[in-house]
Length: 353
Ligand code: ADP
Ligand code: MG
Image 1 (cartoon, protein in one colour):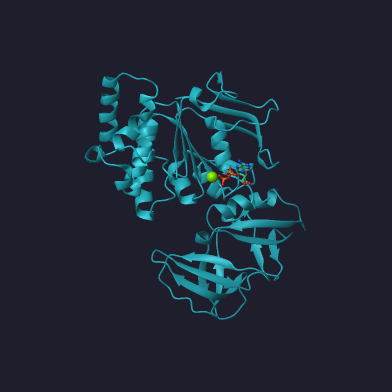
Image 2 (tube, helix red, strand yellow):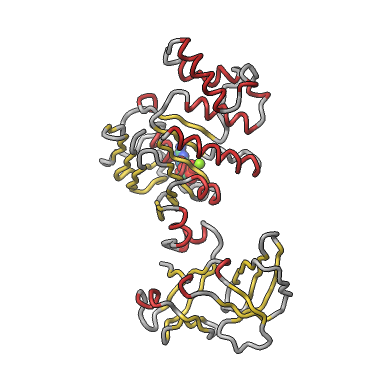
């Protein structure tokens, strides 16, 4: 496995679309890096640049695999394996023929091919299906064939573009665990593209969140979720509530006049009378019923949805505009129209840029 380094890589398509703004990115050897972001943010383009299926603008940027500069090398000279959402299997070949394809075209010895094929069929639990046509397989089985086909050539780097998007939720959850275990046991450097935040958190050693062709933030799942750098990242990973107000007497005064005490950290990074924007996660808020509005921070229940492991309560009138979402883990009913007080630890308020 190798470390991948992108330095000042930019991609403009021939129609003028700037798909990737100047980007520096290092994927450590044996790391699983997830590229996460909404449709059109440049995930596939970044992956195709690393693969050598697409070439970066010639502005002096470079892509390295270890010490080797691969910027201008085509895919067949890069030792990469690829797996796509659409599987891209050969429909006229059976499972075994699909898996060994990459070795066949390299003219590898038949005995070696047979040995490796047996290994792959076993690893991916496909022994029973060796001679089956790929159209006779389920989605999960097809994706395992695609993975086996990519891995059999022992690539330095494995690139996966939304490999599980076409599968149902249960299979998705099982396969992503399997894929992570497999990648870790092979010690392969991997770039994994998804638009699904839960998948990103479960799969990645680190996550790079992309926004309009730009890395908005890169870090572990915990860092991205607990310390999002800006509103885009906070909104994309999980649910968030945003509070805006002025800092007066160590408190954030909302446009409803309601006050939120600020932590010393938040105060240290703000000036008096300055407008401040803070994030608070729904699971960090607790609700208590009140009969009057004397409390520092209150709202009115507008809806309450039982989700099994929690109840998601939506509040109005905390701020003049917008709603506040609260996840309650106790089985308490919050009828619409009820006045409730919000409480939380001030350390859970995260300042946003
Ligand atoms: P994602 O994989 O995150 O959905 P893409 O990398 O496919 O995003 O696309 C990023 C941007 O580049 C989009 O605006 C898309 O329309 C554009 N794009 C992708 N491929 C091409 C192409 N071959 N020609 C022109 N524009 C493209
Ligand atoms: Mg894509």
